[in-house]
Length: 232
Image 1: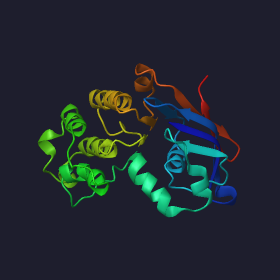
Image 2: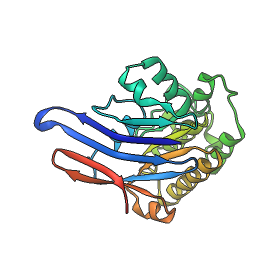
Image 3: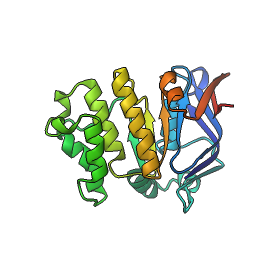
């Protein structure tokens, strides 16, 4: 599903600069991989780069999907129109902030990515996710009326509502109690497998990562930055 080699990102300059390196990453359809490391090491920066929100300093290869779309060429060529289309169609983002639109109901927030792609606003998988996460009674409320945990659960359903090829989740369980966090983690794993997606999940909860036996992409601090590599 995803193949990447030689990713190098630089944020800031001089003494305030921070480098993030990912020598290689392979993600198969149905695979969920956890991204772990200390706070501030660059985990969110890594997701933003893989999510085509940052232009890397260097990138040798980056392909996505069975047709192996050459994302490295699009990034290096600055093809913003094609990149925007891929972000909307093939990627799903779950940010720590949730990123819900405050003037839309839960129902309309969830339906938005499907509407933008011309898909029917409802689907059985979306309804199932809402039921599992306890969102069915909240569909007509706006984000301002929700708890932090309810907003995070809503943001997850919105991120997967259009059934993207790659889900990028940044600390999806940070605002949830242990039971709700385990329920959300389980739903991520099951839906990724069911929909033949792939997912990268940044998580500080090593107990959950271990419980679900997820392979890990581990951060190692280096002078001036951080390097990510699969756990051995």
